Image 1 (spheres, helix red, strand yellow):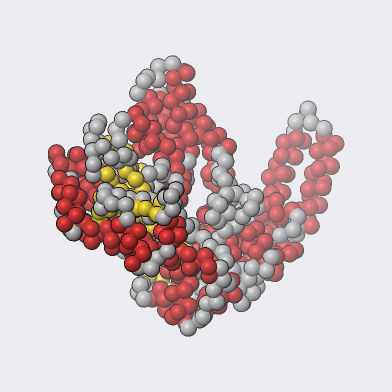
Image 2 (cartoon, rainbow, N blue to C red):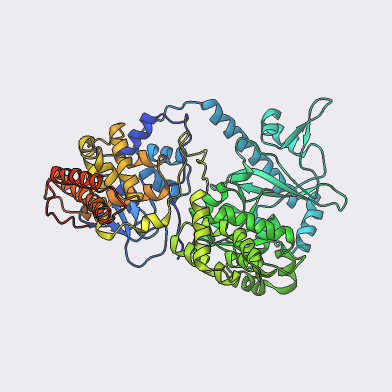
Length: 620
C-alpha cells in the first residue's frame, strides 16, 4: 500500500491577494470538488469514502463541509479545498487557486505581475528550444545522435516518452530558433540557453549533445541536460544553469513520467543519472527518477514522501557510492520514507546491467533490494565488534540514522537490531538513540517555517506516558476549543496549563488557544485549522484536521463549558494526587523536614478543595 505525507506545500506570497484566496476558500464547494474523485457517503456531520491518495478497502477518508476540510485516518492526508487540488492534481498553490477561481468566476487581481511574466517568457523560450532540439534529432543532422542512442538500446518509443532531442554542433541553433520565435536574447540567457560573447552577441550553450529535457511536475520544460557525443568533448555532461524556474535541489529528471508509475507501484526509485532512470524505465520500472547533478535534499525528500512511503536508492557500489547512500538516508529517513538499497556489481550502472543481464534480472535486483538501514548496520559492524570501543564506534555511526526515523515502533526495532549486530546492550543502544533524537536540532523549513520557530522533535517516551483515558479527554478539550476558542481565556490559566501531560495533543490545544487569541477564526467563529499549517509540527497539524473533520467523535448534549471545566478539573486533581503521594513519602522519611512537609500537605489540600475535588475520581 502506498502511503503519502501531506500538508508540506507552502504558498508563495505576493502573487494572489489574501482576500481573493479567502474568497475562493469560502465560495468553493469542497464536497462537490472531492465528490468528482471520491464516492462520498454521509456519516453524521462528515462524509466518508475511499481515500484517493492511498489504496484501501474500508473508507477512512472524511470530508467535513462545515469546516471546509478533509482528513484521511489511514494515510493522514489533510487539507482544505485548495490543498486537495495541490495534492490530488500535483498543482502548485497558485495554480490550484487560479483553477478554483476560474470555476467560480472569481477574477484574480495580480500583483508582482512582472515576475510572473518573466517566468512565462522563460517557459516559452525553453519550449522553443525543446521543439528545436527534438526536430534536430529527427533531421539528417541528428543521425550521429540517433545512432548513439541506438547503441545505448534506446528505441523510438523511449525517445518519445522522455522527449529526447539533439543540439547540433553549431554555435547558433538555439539563437536562431529564439530569434524566429521573437524571444529576446536576454530571456534566452536568463533561461540558460545562451551565453554572451565577449565581442558582442550570443551563442548556444549546448552544442553537439544529446539533449535530455528536465520537466517540472506539470510537465513543463524547466532545464536541459546534454550528453556529449564526441569522445574528446568536455565536459561529458553539461546542464543549463539554475534559473527562476529551475532549482536543482527541487528537481528530478523524469518526474512527470514517473508520477503514475509511482502511484501504481507504491514506491519510487532514485538513481544518479539520466541513462539510469531511462534504463530502469526500459526494464519496466517507470517509477524511477534521477537527481540533476546534486545530492538528495530535504526538498527532494518532501516531494517523494508526498507520493509514496517506499523508496529504492540506487547508487554506485564503490566507496563513494556507499557514503552517498548514507548521506541520502540522513535526508530521507526523517521524511518518513522506508528506504531499500539497490546495489549493482562494481563498475556497472543500470544501463550496463540491463544490456548484459536483461530486464528481468534488473527488476529482480531492485525488487529484492535489502533494507538500507540494515545495510548500514552490517557495514558498521563488518570490521568487528569484539572490544567495547568497537561496539561504541558501530553504535555511534548508525545511531543518528536510527534516531531520524519518525515512527517510534520502527525506531525501537532498528535500535534492537543494531544492538544485536554490535553485540551491545540493547538498553544502552536505546539510550544512545534517545539521546541523539532529543539533542537533534531541526531547523525551520525556510519555505514554511515561522521566523525563530523551528519544529521540535518530542521524545516518544514522553508521548507514551499519556494513558488512553487522558488522550480521550485531551481530544475532547481540543475539539471544544476548536469550536469555542473564546472559552480559553480563563479555563486554561495557571495551574491547568501545567496539568496537561506533555504530548502532541497538548501542543494542539494551546495552538488552538493561540489561534483564537490572534483571531485566526472562520466565519462561524471557530478556529481556522489552516492557520496552524505553518505554525506547528506536521503531527500536530494532522491531529487538528483529524479532530475537526470528524466532529462526531464526542457527544454535544452537555454544554461545552461544563464539559471543559470537568475535564480540566480531572487533570488538575490527578496532578495533585501525584504531588500528595510525594509529600506522604516525605512525611515517612525521617531525613525530611517534617514541619515543611506538613505545611506543603495542608497547602495542597486547600488547592484540592478549591477544585471541589474531595473524593472525586479523576477518571484518568
